[in-house]
Image (cartoon, rainbow, N blue to C red; front, top):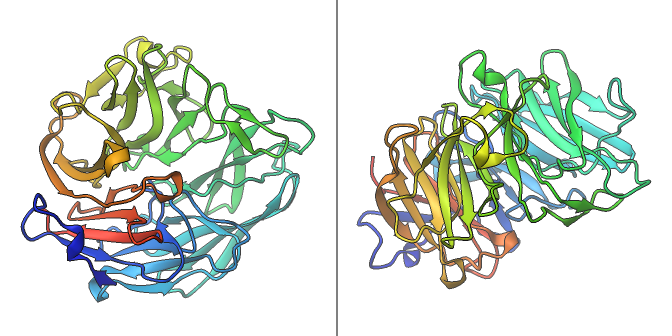
Length: 410
């Protein structure tokens, strides 16, 4: 770790502290900000070295996941050594790290689900997928670099490519792994699911804990090996919620009306059943933050869904220009980057009011991460579960590194 007071400026709050967590001469970063990579006591998180803001190369022998021990001077201890380690999730009780080892290839290879205690002991393989998925002819490949774990720690979801290399525009799917049964099933499939971003609702309610937030990229194009040529068509993506048995497919009330479109980042508001997305609008030209609740499926109609329930969280912010963001586990505190991104983005925090009603309030500027904001160097800010500490990426040094900021208030 390295203290970085030089990243503060005259507008930064008094008492703010910035720490550069990674310092090697190779790119390192935080894991994508929607990931469940923190222990619930906010004392440890998982990061990765030899990686970029959107993942890593599965064939990179230098790639490692590391545990950052905040209370022990932010010491970094490797917790994986396998080539192909990807898609980590920490169990809700903070005892285990689940991850996958991706040795797949199109229509072949193997995918292994592993578990290890956070101290690096008791590593075990729980399941190996090296043949067609049950009741299908599909072999998973193109493994998505993010997994998500249910609030009871019993299930993980992971998305993948399912094509066999014979034709373009093949199918993608969402897999749900049952930890106790050491089994996996395909609950969703189709050519428009190339960038699912699956996120389990973190509510402990027995029903809501089965819900997964998912992204559908209408109008995407892909080649026979699952490489994306175009991520989304003119009508844009839309966001849905699905139960983890493949039932109860619902709409989130965002985009798809010809003016508003989903940028592609969304997350649950803490443990609630409300979710937040960043939208763009053509008129006025803004990038807003919209809260919403899942509604019965009504076609791929987004904002026009019958009975849509939404709340503009950024309506009291002048000229909103937001991209990536996250909340604490209680859904009370919010962190985000803010543009203009071609002039040095800013890092801001704010507080929530009443769900579905209030705008974000008590906005506070923290600092400029000085990132290039190139795709591989996105800032991707997020909070510790207790909301007391913030995290971001930056390539301000010329090499992508991971940072932490604290001291912005209780």
